[in-house]
Image (cartoon, rainbow, N blue to C red):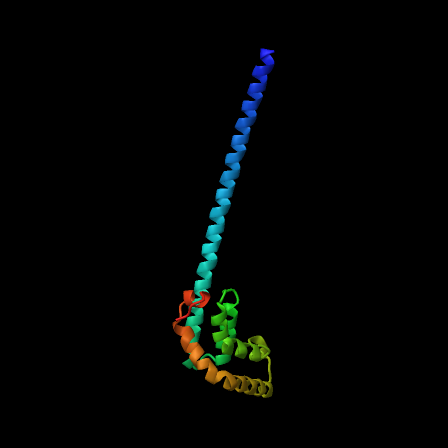
Length: 159
């Protein structure tokens, strides 16, 4: 009888030890997953801030003859796709998004190179017409974008 009791206690202790081991393994795995998640979140936040810095640089380039308003708008639209802009910021940036949408179908890159001169003139006229339609609204937006911080555009309060 005592043998059975001692055996049962040993089995219980072995199972308790194994349960403790498994608990520690799960805790270590959960801690590692939390650290990994925090690293990924920090990386994503850094990339979003870098993207915003690129938006600021692009918006400052509006007077540079090497880049068109259309290209600025298209690039800004692309850069901000993964940034959770506040509704107010998105509204304020509407002219940028409007120009980007209006000119998104124009050929770029290799498609542009492959066009005939006549086609290039036609598409350039379309681009200039779209830019002219948005130019007045774009100027204050681009000026604002070049100075506003990332934290200001993702939060609800803008300065």
